[in-house]
Length: 485
Image 1 (cartoon, rainbow, N blue to C red):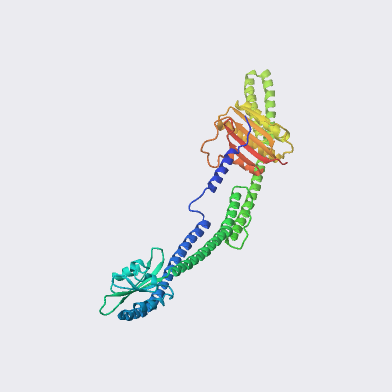
Image 2 (tube, rainbow, N blue to C red):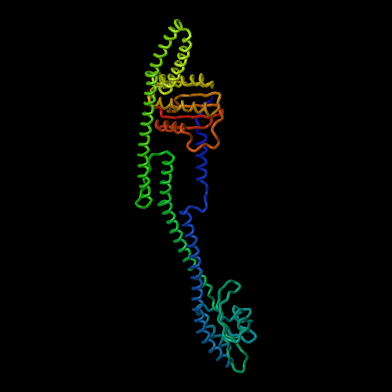
């Protein structure tokens, strides 16, 4: 059967973990969510502040213009009434022309009840209909009312204006109107520019603050927590034996220090557990060896002596009392069977090839005994001689192979078992393959006691144990330990 490392399952699990951790999650991490929400709220507040500032500037500008229009309208109304009573239209034109340089004043005109311009601050409007002048909107409002009018409007060309209409009370004549048009387009434009500039400055400051907040959350908190989380995950997966502390003087640093102390205590306990397990295994192995030697050298020798005595008795009875010789023959056969069983037990507890000839001969003997006793073909493969292997390592590897072969015989219903031993990529690799029914689809948590003992023996040697299915099917147990004496 082909020998191949069982890494596909772990590689696929690592790839799936990387894929799931790199996927975009919702809601996003707080280091992104909080600055974005604050940025949106800040921009909304800046926009509302822009609208409020603009409205206040426009209202203040309108109040300034209306105050000026009130004063100018009062003076021009009195002046226009005096000239109209006397019929001094030219003098009225001259007086209105003198007012055309007043700030924001675009047009001042006196119109009759039909809307004809009698006098204006600009001679070009005199004699025209008010509807043909910038005062068209003012005249429209005035013709629909009887009293003073003061409001703002927008002309077709987009200019913002303030309209003022003052009725002229002239005795014995129809109603005339004094119309004032104030152009405040530049003021409104400046108000928009000022408000927009304030909004841009506020938005820039808010964006910079949010960027700074993100930098603090990302580099000061999230990135450091990420490093700590990776260290803890690597420790939990066994890829590292300690956690590096995160620099700083805040809670993240304190948390990393707490994790580091915890991992140190766990590492100390793990070392104590490993030492204790090694001591237990060594004690158990020594006890196995002692009992095996006692069975072989004590009870085995005594049974051999008794068997020789019974054989001698059988020979005497055969000559003197043949009727009793058959009983001696049965006793001799029972002693042979008991002696064979004792020898089998002693060799299982303390295999002679392992202690006298090394691991390779012990594994070959295990394969031969398995083939003879079970009828299942068991082969041992070792491409090259294994040099300088310690007695403890040899014992643990033999017991792992022995347990794996017994499991294959009991549970796998296999027709062939392969025991492989070789050096590969700096590791000593022991593999036990069978072509049986394979592992269950839903493995039992923790496995059986034999599986856990194999796992403990592997950990004591500082290696790793993998289990799965070889390419041809069945079950494979693979043990990788550092190739050190």
